[in-house]
Length: 102
Image 1 (cartoon, rainbow, N blue to C red):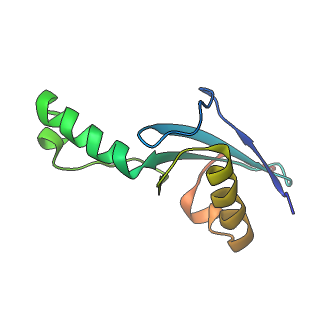
Image 2: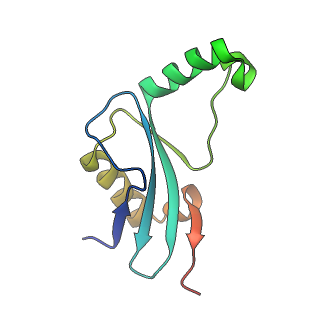
C-alpha cells in the first residue's frame, strides 16, 4: 500500500554507500515531512573530515534533525524505510513536519 510519495530535492544518484540525502515524504492526507538519510559510512567520512576542519568539536560527534541512518542510500531502501515509518506512525516522531493539511 502506498500512502505517501517521495521527493528528492537534490536528486538521487543510486545506490551509494557513502552519502547523505534530504527526502520529503508527502502523505495522502496532505502533510509533508522532511528527513535526512545518512549512510553509516558517511557518518565516518563526515567525522574524519570535521577532524581536519574543526567542525563538531573536531569530528567528535555528528548530529542532524530528523536523521535516519541506513546501510545504503537507494530508492528501494528509502521507500522501505518510508513505508515502515508511515505504517507504524513513527513518521510523526521522526520526521520534521514541513506542511500541514490544516
